[in-house]
Length: 264
Ligand code: IPE
Ligand code: IPE
Ligand code: MG
Image 1 (cartoon, rainbow, N blue to C red):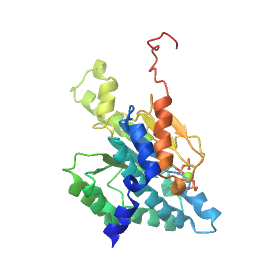
Image 2: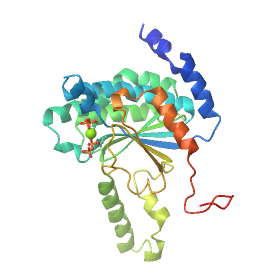
Image 3: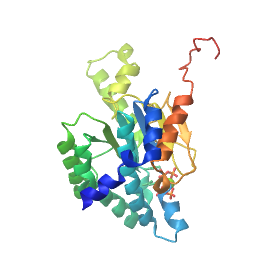
Image 4: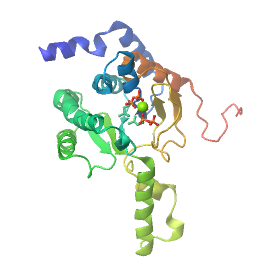
C-alpha cells in the first residue's frame, strides 16, 4: 500500500514536473545545493497549529525535495536542519526536532536506499541525544555504499563553531611542528572543515523570506549564488525547486574574472 502511494506520487509521473525536469537537466546542474529550511513555525501559526506541526510538515518537504534533487542530478544536497543557536528554543520544540531524524529515517530510509542516496551529517554529533545519534548513524551506515546523491544534514551545525574547531586543529598542527605558517592556505582550511570531502555549494536557497545566513557555511558560501524565496518551507515543492535551479542556470558566475565577451 505504502509502496503504491509512493509510486503514485513519484515526480516522474507528474507531467508538468517531468517536462520542467527535462528542461533543467539539459543545462548546467549545480553540483552542491544548500538549503536553509525556514518558515515551519510561521506555516503552523497561519493555520493556528502548534509550531511542531510545521516541523512535521517540513519533514515531508525534505522527502519531496530530496527526490526531485536526485532526479535533477544534483550531487550534494545540504539541508540546514538544526543550528547551534536553535538550542535557545523551548525544550518541547527542541525535543520534537531531535525526534524528527528518527521519524524521517524510519519512514523514508528504504526509499533513500532505493534511490541510491547516501546520508551524511555535518555538525556537532557527540552532544545530540542518544536516540537522535542512533537514527542518524544507522542511516549513514546503511547508505554508506550508495554512490548517488549525498543528502547531507546540517544538524547541530554552526559555522562559527566549525571555524573555531578548524583553527584549533590548524594551530595544533603548527605547534606540533607539522606545518609551517606558509602552509596555511585555502586548501588547508577547507580540508579542516566539516565539509572537507564535499564540493563548495554552488547555490544557497533560503525559504520564508528571511535574508540572512544564520551562521550557515560562512566560509563555503564565499562564491555561491544566493536565492531567497518567500515560500515557507512546508509549501516549498518540486516546482519551486526546479524554478530555483532554472534561476541558477540564468546567473552569470564570474568568480572575480570577466566574461569571455569581456563585460564584467
Ligand atoms: C525552520 O523553521 C526549522 C528550524 C529552524 C529547525 P522555523 O522553526 O525557524 O520557522 P519560523 O522561522 O519560526 O517560521
Ligand atoms: C536557521 O533558521 C536554522 C535552520 C534553518 C536550521 P532560524 O529560524 O533558526 O534562524 P533565525 O533565528 O531566524 O536567524
Ligand atoms: Mg526560522
